[in-house]
Length: 316
Image 1 (tube, helix red, strand yellow):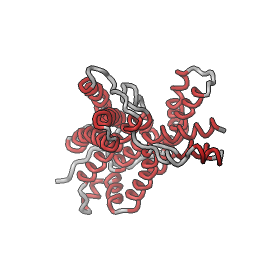
Image 2 (cartoon, one colour):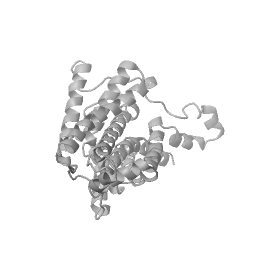
Image 3 (cartoon, one colour):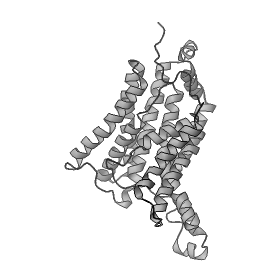
Image 4 (cartoon, one colour):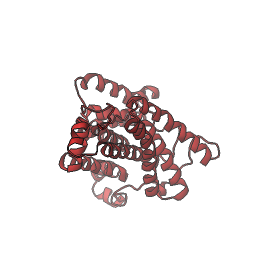
């Protein structure tokens, strides 16, 4: 029983960074811009979040700065794909090369040549909700509270991630802005004839995508672990991209996919913790194997927004 709730705990923890990045991908692609640069944006966001958190001791400022770092890289992607009609995939690959390289370069500047940041004290990490609620006396009086604690005592970024899914869904499907975003993603020329500024909408979507990816990276270095290192993200951005596709380019679908991939990560961590004799290298491969299986078995025939990835030039 404890192992089961332990897997739920780690599933929620490891799903949160994926949810942020996947929602960013959902917004960008619904606006017509393919963003495979989520990995690079998450990496830079993780580095900046850990650096600001270490030097200022303010996790909220660090979390925000991590998002802004991802937004900075997304600005480069937006300029290349929107203004210069560059190939979206090629631009995204470039971002995935720039992000980790720039992160390590900055880490060496800020931390005396080290390729990783110094650890952030637990008190300076993002807070856990209900940390003071599940007292020893309460658990002693109600033993089942031990299991509730394992599920509910999460870092606040986990709760933010779930709330953000609802917000993104509401914006995309219940607001005028969301209607314009989806119109631009389906047919930007037609949207322009109705007075919608397609360039502006695309910029909003790409910058928001980068900000959310940066938050996902910062949540890794400020909640899941306590510092940035070269292998911290290691494919999380690509898993988020797969979750977005598996989820049908919808926020609710991306949430389900992120929970699935987070469960794979949680299972690999939990199996190692309880001492099951499996090669740790095989355990670390589990989330990526499940990602590939999902893409091969369940994504066939899914179709994103019609204009996603296609260059757009305004009619003169």
